[in-house]
Image (tube, rainbow, N blue to C red; front, side, top):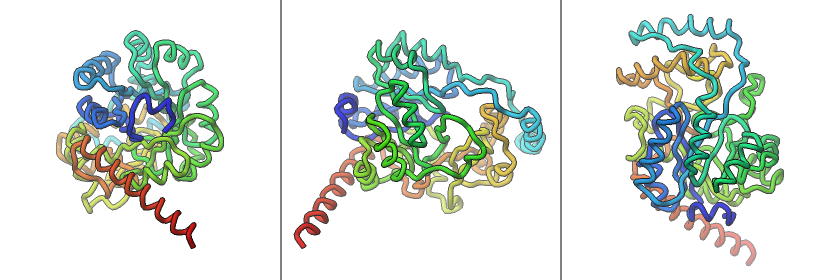
Length: 361
């Protein structure tokens, strides 16, 4: 790995920050203690909620960890399209005996306040999703000793990350579960995402920053493939979602390997932004009609998703998952890191053997 990354975690494994209550302190701590980089997800939390989780995590580990922020989003949604989608969701609200959420609950996810907290109480690593922070923001984090990461889904976006002064880029392939971290939400680009290995190679050739590969990685051999393609480390989300320390709902964990859920799709159904989840009833019925309207749609559907979870109905939940979800393993997070590292070592040995054998022919 790049020495800049090695200073923060010896194993080339990053636990992806999964918003919505999945990336809890106990999960991040377990990954950190095993030698990886654990992450807290500040998305959808208040600034104080984020701060309290940071305090809790610091009580569980002395190792470096990260906090992820969502970038504020521009106002691009068509109000008429949001109205039409809200009308379509009225039946869901009746079914779950709840109200639709307030679409105007906020666009910036408390970004400035959270950033102020992280500057006053610095953490080792901060990452950004849904865009690139300003050079001033990156510089301010550097002044307090924070290492910075930014997600990119194309080589062009990676160049923007490098121009911002960030320390490393997270190359997120289309296989990744949850939200795609595109810098701009362009409906015309739906379905045009780049596969991880191709993306890592393109990003590696486009920028000189360390690269963290993210998207569908569930096994150590896949980490080895990403490293061979030019990555310095790998970020895994779905693999950690099934661990005992994960804060994911039990139904969500079970759905990863439930034969009822056979595939994933990118959808705007739950949030108004492309995100990969297991195909269930809600996604099938509403995905084709969901507008490009984030976070308005997220706010609208939030009570529906909570009511579905409370009712034990996985068909109405946002079951975020990457394409490798069927390979999920119900292991403690620390043990999963150990298994992944053993698989990575075995893959490296096997590859060396094949290369040596080929050279000897």
